[in-house]
Length: 165
Image 1 (cartoon, rainbow, N blue to C red):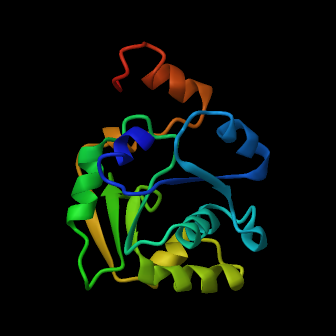
Image 2 (image 1 turned 90 degrees about the vertical axis):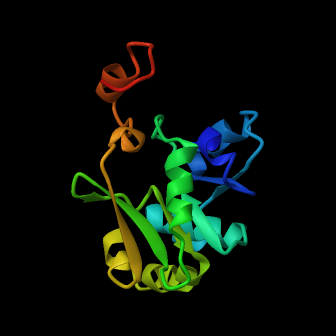
């Protein structure tokens, strides 16, 4: 994710949970590493995105998880090219599934995120229903493959050629 963002982003921040913070701090990543704002710790991806937005000022934010090894800067550039003044987010739709964690968000959604979190609503889907979103149909699933389990790793990476099968 860092490699894919470098050509596109001026600043980067990794948001992690407190238990993993030390691991990231011990790596030579050359990016800021933070945890969720204390009030929202443990409240999922929405809290992480909001915490990053509070940490780094920008007009638009690219959001990526760290478990998508095939993400590339071309995919990110395509999302960024669709940023429009009348939209608050660009969300890929891959095989009928929304990808709100591989997306871009305008800074105007920050307060809506805060209200959702303050109201105990942590669902990305619930937030998207309140936003003016450009939904981008995507045919190539490869950049969106995430590695959550050892079996995923074996299927997509374990063969050492680093290309999905």
